[in-house]
Length: 538
Figure 1 (cartoon, rainbow, N blue to C red):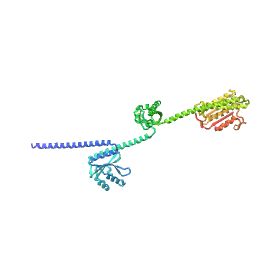
Figure 2 (figure 1 turned 180 degrees about the vertical axis):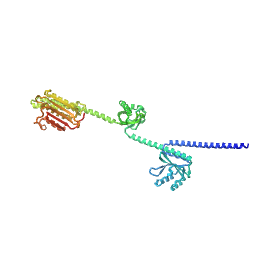
Figure 3 (figure 1 turned 90 degrees about the vertical axis):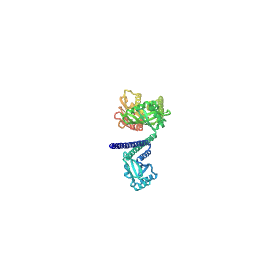
């Protein structure tokens, strides 16, 4: 029996020790569970915080219990100097103002040892700060820096009644809390910065008078529109989004729908980032069609490089289109009126020609008849211009090549000589001239060809008359050459002082047109006119 008692005592002792160890383990597990629960609640509160100030409040409420204090604050450094109490619990307003006033002095700097993570709470070495703290009943301070990715976001300051050393468990828990707070602050500040940036961009886009949009050419849906679409077309943004894939079919004009679809297909295959342009009509909320001019570029591509989304700006050009339509209508009316004017001028010249023909019947004097005949040819020369303008699509410019062919042909056929006697050669290129220049040049051709037909080949001599019209490549000047291989101008005739009405008319018209004239009589007669202005190109 004596041996059994010591063994029983040993077993009981071991059992008590085991139960004690299990109780300690259970207590530690419960403590860890409680801390995990507290950390879960703390992190959830941080995530649910809507503002930075709410994060500060959650941080203070979370750090006080594990450090066994009821006083704490979030302090931020000012942009210029000093510090500011952003959020606090358990501190008087007088104390906070005293501390802020103390650090307003540039000579008072925050002690560097308070910038690293503390393992104990003590009072600062500055006696003035100690006096301020003691007046508040503060015996020790611990400063926990809020830092994330090398950015100092501020400090959490805990206040205690007396100096104390933190346990390793308190340090780890506090470090975890401070890290979570720094991450939450960084995320919230980034969210606010992004939100402010988006609001800034939205304000800009909403003040632009053009419709800004992002269109997904792959799913055929509008992704974004600014407020301008409501001002211009009357649809709300919700109505635009609700149209979905039917957007274009609903608001784009039926005559432009196929063009818009082809445009999107063309843009989707583009590999460059160039601008694309298109005009089309859209229907407003009242059923009125409006014209738009869009400039677009690529906004987003798929992984294979195909265009997925385009961004564009649509300008309302309805008023410009209406003005263009009115202008075209007015221009068409004026063209009709101008053609009618040319037609009437041509008819009036024909009447004058007929009157001269009637008058010639009562004249027996040969010289007078020749003068009337010359006048009729000049009238006919001018009449051809107005007839051609009346029949032409361009009522302001004359195709001088076509005009010369008709004029020379009429003069050649109306001459009394044998056509086999004189060969007429034309080498003329298409040229557009205004009406004044064309009439003057036509009269010059009329006078010189008439003189050549009359006097260059006497006694039925055979010869050649050439009319050449071209534009020089180097200076684009217009050249007109009329030459023959006849007997030439007699030496007794001075071109600059001749009494001949035809040659005088040629000289006057040359001066009016500011045309340079090169007259040569070496072989026959050659008139070379150079027009140094630049008539309208063909």
